[in-house]
Length: 64
Image (tube, rainbow, N blue to C red; front, side, top):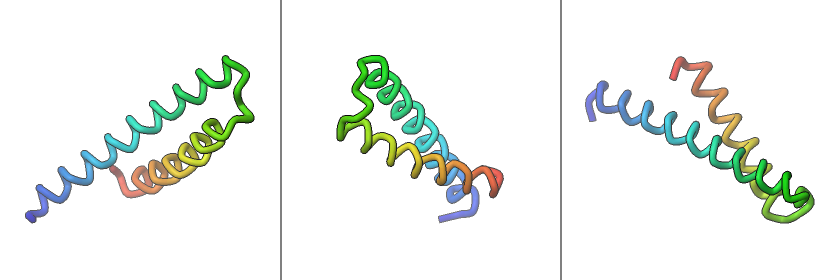
């Protein structure tokens, strides 16, 4: 894998993480509006959002 291919792969990964974060946040917002913030699904999404946010922070620190 060349350096440019590797960079493209990392950029695609970063875009995927950001998109998944947005989808997760939208699902959480829908559950919140339905007053279902104590459900297992909401809690799973909450944990996923935290993980995605941490990945995004690390990517941002490295300029991706």
